[in-house]
View 1 (cartoon, one colour):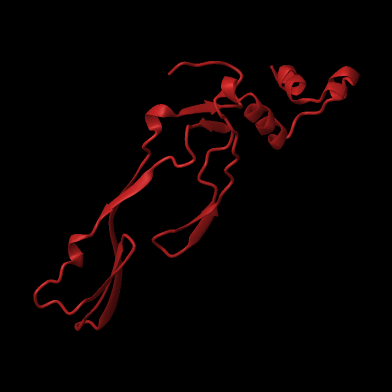
View 2 (cartoon, helix red, strand yellow):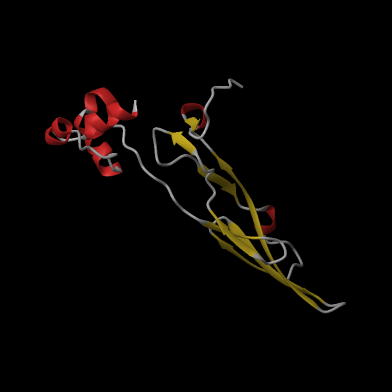
Length: 150
């Protein structure tokens, strides 16, 4: 199968002289675009991103949220959405002296306690992520050498 990909993406001269190398991503995508009636507009996109998470103790870790050696086939680059509603704390409460401001989907609330003296800042969010295309996406593990059906 790899040999077939090489030959399909290589030029005529490379095929005749048997000098084709493994095609790069741009070459494979150009071939897929050229055969759009066969591959229906399929394009390969490499997503390589890092995100930073802050833990409860204040330490931050930066890592790639995607699993190594796994390919995701999806019909869209947008895999899902974050759904949210205003937290109930955002309502003005009678007698409350807390400062409250909404920043996107997050409520930032600041108040103080008198005894013991304490200033508190809270970030509150009522949200959840949803992978809308989960039923129409396929994950493939590429480092396996055998097939195990779950």
